[in-house]
Length: 110
Length: 116
Image (cartoon, rainbow over all chains, first blue to last red; front, side, top):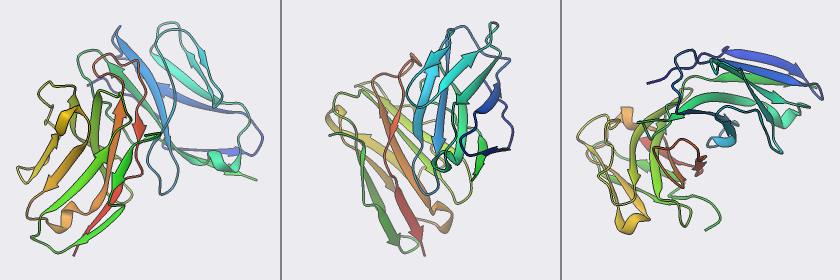
């Protein structure tokens, strides 16, 4: 399985941007980069995914390095409701299921 | 439906009993996945289904666990002779396609199983 590396935890202040990093040096050419988040006592929630180009949606932006060996999830203005565990996952290729790691626990301070 | 529906939301069972957990995926989603999450832990993959193909059962922890998907839609996860270590939240997800990586998963709210 292609692996990802994320910091265990990060802190942010409310209304400030947050950059959540992810390293995936063994990514293959067909792997998509997925981000999910899990709020306390809830199932994971899809955030964003991409292959090569940067992606934007209403929740976040995904910046993918040119060599695709790392990516950054960007929350433009953190709110208290963004406090969650954020998972960076590689999907695609020959393996259909997403393998979740430990993720980054994001705390947001008012 | 609008989302992935799981039932029951909570289940308490006695050790040694069998339990069935149900998942209704989003209409039109061909792929369905089961994960479990023990308290304070990450998600553990169990099994996935893609259309009428044979399921990938590589994540099932023992032969007490089985799952089926009828008509390419509803799925049931069965745990026989439950043990206390089976206590966890069982999460179901669906997506449009498996193996391509380009489609996001939608998760249900999970079934919290407690074995006493």
